[in-house]
Amino acid sequence: MLTLADLAFRSSRGRVAPGPKGSFFLGSLPEVRRDPLRLMLKAFREYGDVVRFSFGPMVVHLVASPSGAQQILAENNKNYGKQTRGFKNLRYVLGNGLLTAEGDFWKRQRRIAQPGFHRQKIAGFAEAMVRAAEDCAARLESKRGQTLDLASEMSRLTLRIVGETLLGYDPSHAADEVGRSLAYLLHIANLRTARVLEVPPFFPSRENRRFRTALQTLDSVVVRMIQERRRNPADRGDLLSMLMHARDAETGESMDDRQLRDETMTIFLAGHETTAMALTFTFLCLARAPQVARELREELTSVLGNRSATLEDLPKLRFNKMVVQEAMRLYPPAWLISRSVEGPDQVGGYDLPAGSIAFVCPYITHRHPRFWEDPEGFDPRRFEREPPKGAYYPFGAGPRQCIGSGFAMMEAELVLATLARRIKLELAPGAPVELDPSITLRPKDGLAMTVR
Image (tube, rainbow, N blue to C red):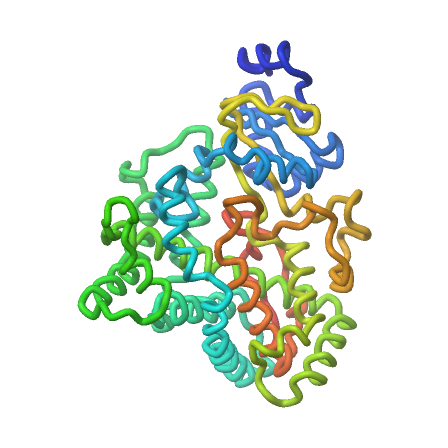
């Protein structure tokens, strides 16, 4: 069903993209709520690189080609904002931090945070990452023969790493509580995005009460951290210290506690949840590909012997890096990127009218058969060559590309080298592996693996 804006735009510019009709009132909304990955993959295979959906009153275009993704995220990024229902619901959790902010405010926050992620700065975090990973390996070694939820283990590990390195605070004592609260909040934010009718956050429903309780759990950890820093404001060399001491170049103002809270919550999500899921899926891929796991262990034995990995080892651990890259190709934690179309544009010869929504989907682009040979296969060696231009973007692209991509890759490589050298993880017999495409891509109900 075409809107007036569609008709006007069509007459002046070009073609309306093909796509499933869906039901008269809801379009494809029921399908996207049930299984968004299945819907989008099926639509991509049937209709091509640009697919038009109706999700209730919303017009949404899925853009799957590398060139289209680059146009939206990089080349014409100023035409694509974050005024989407997804970001609106994410703001209830994260506030107005780097991930959700826009315009001049985002530019200011990015300038302040950028020095904290310079190469020399994050290099100093390597020892803390390895130390945390070695402690995790020791804990897993003590559970040989037992079956555990690897997603929870990786979340606990990455929470400690991001806490110690970026926030100067070890939240390990609250890791389970923080992990559960964050997972629930992201799940509800995702559910709300796909609903036809929005229930106001202040309405006293059971879901809203539980949502507020989970948010208060996270807030209590973050506020306690900020208050402790206010009492002891010495510069500790971490990102939180830098944010607290930063001054706006024009006004001389520093961040208030609300801004610090929003940025800290964003760090918890972007620096903890995404890397945890990347590592979880990496071990899933290794468990399914024993020959790749053997090649990885051979490299680790050759380079490291029986010692811990260091930052200086990473250039020699080339296969180790390729394993991480290939796992993030198949299972990118940021599996879907949404943008609001501010002004009319054309992508791949099709119209994207102002007021509609654009979906860029790394999960699909990373499987595009025109750019990837054997796209569903797990083959780390494919990264011996540069990926096709624009076909691989697990951290996004353009000016909004993840500020912590270097930090995340270093962390994932060091953790993988540390754990894979000491333990082997096997999929528990009969354990289901089902994807949960929430705000991040997660294994639904965790990932049951046995320590060997």
